[in-house]
Length: 379
Picture 1: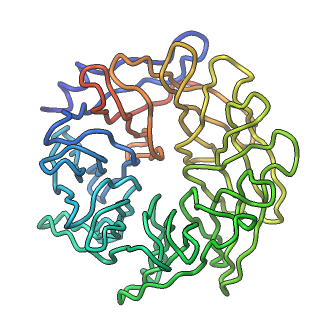
Picture 2: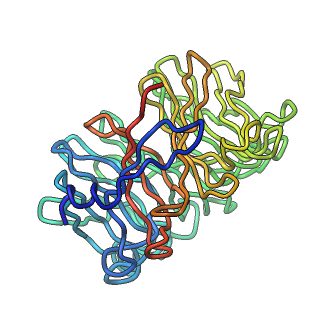
Picture 3: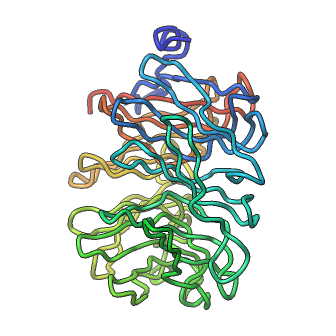
């Protein structure tokens, strides 16, 4: 099936009314069978412009897939996950190396039934298990996108396991050595990591987690030397958000951006935490009936934050933009279920400048999902 056909069949402006700000094209509708279904993770691109991603379910073995969408619209399944092999249910976005290999995780299965950290080489379709998670001190149930540094060390989080079962932050060096950088042992200091990791120019790591002194979640810091501290505890001021979740991003000045629940209308917030721990709420959802509920999927690109929500009245998710310098929020599109609904995973800027993402469901094949492309209109 060619991209020209898909564009003709599925292109539609989904943003209605006063906030029409983008055109969405559905590039692929998952078949709910061998082609995969229920994508939970955002997409990534190789150096040739091919789009890659995972589905959390379906496939030949019913445990998820790795797929490829070529620039001409050709879709193919490259690998099927299995409970005893590469693991099952890949929910974290894959990370790409400069050699076009992809690294990711599964939340279960593998040799120890605690999830896996894998490397997939599209050339030849080779899957290598770099680490098999298990019950115990090392952590299990790895989630979220991995972070790779210049030394090719991989950093990630596991939301369960560790010495008290509250999760871990880990690293895996290029020679295969696995080490726990932080073991969450006291909910007052954070528990159950709830975001990917980001790093500043000094090599300090940051992430989000639940728990904390106000039991509303935290942003934590792991210094380059290994010291752990809470950078910001949600619940410190009224309506500052609760339960930070999903992708976080960091800018060149070390400011951390993310989304959380709560807020003045209990519909969620977009926040910024400065290097000194000062938190600023950039947007409070619920001030407008059109701006959505439950923000997630955050991406920092070209001086703006882009993200998704899972609901607005009568519709089933949105894509939004927040221009940081101007302090302006816009809903770019709202999904009405005609082709896709409930966007999932982090958004991604493509090599053509458009924004790409996935939805978990679609009305043509319920529970199957879609891949979409969004092109912004005039501001």
